[in-house]
Image 1 (cartoon, rainbow, N blue to C red):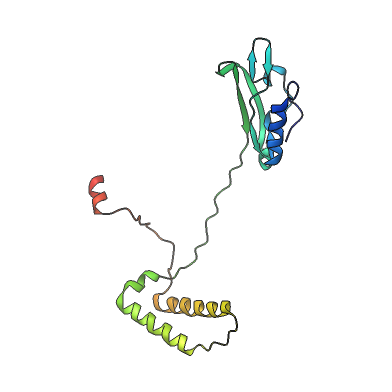
Image 2 (image 1 turned 45 degrees about the vertical axis):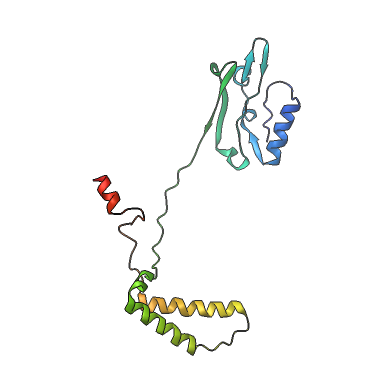
Length: 178
């Protein structure tokens, strides 16, 4: 949590920050790199020079931190110097999801398909013998009946959706856009 390259003596506030960082598994980046005195002091008012501003990151992000320093001639707030940090992020290419067919349940809105589905489910439930001793097994058996019947009745999608629909788009919105 502390790199060992701080500035000045540790006081009660500094100890509290370190306890905070330790408790939440954080690292104080200002102390990770050996720097000149002018690149460590974040507050300077006459003879008083202190390290009062910190950049803190998660322990697992410590490897991404490349540099942390104070820009000596740049005041962001009166008497406080600008503290900057360089991090290196790796970019990963998005892996395309493999298409998994889905049951076309929207076909159940059609009256003919819905009636066929209901009659098939009733027949399969009547055929199924309840040999299960556990409630979870009963539920799994019922789920299998419902899903298999839906696949047979409604069918599966053949490919990914080519045009996504938005729930909020309607004629009123189209007219306003036009």
